[in-house]
Length: 203
Image 1 (cartoon, rainbow, N blue to C red):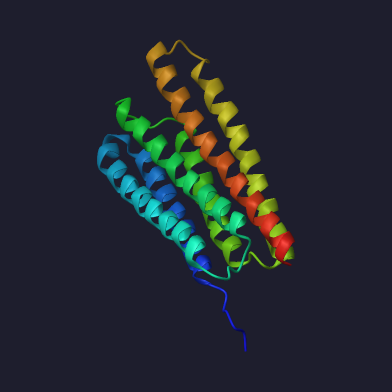
Image 2: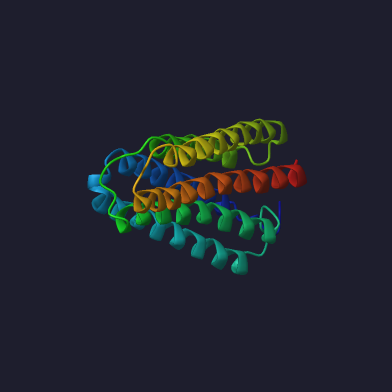
């Protein structure tokens, strides 16, 4: 019998953060499909972001109070922060759509948000497989492919802004939105890299 049991609730918290990532991504995709409804959907995304912050706060408290943790304390902190960053960036993208008074969807926006939805699903599966090295490497490969798909979409979408005589203000608005989406997709790969690193240490 172990004198101190490892606090396994960290994994539940990671899963919850990954679920929130998926919810925020799905809401963002809806928002970009229907920008006229952006203000309402952005409020829902902000609620998910606030709930995510609460989970990160719980994780940090638990790091301080748990005698034995299932993973290295620094790894727990970095993973929680990276997951939270994605949700924050999704919230930032939604905020820009509202702030810039965007009223019509644009090619590339919905597709980039869809990559975030797929990456979030892969990260949720990854969190469940964090101690299984081979499975983690498979998840990592898929997330890398999604990130590359995001880069191609980003380049195409930003390029399209300069194809025709667009009002400069529209170009500025959408360039910022596409930048925010690309940053969120890149951060998904950072989450994946942290998960792979943890898997390698703990396999």
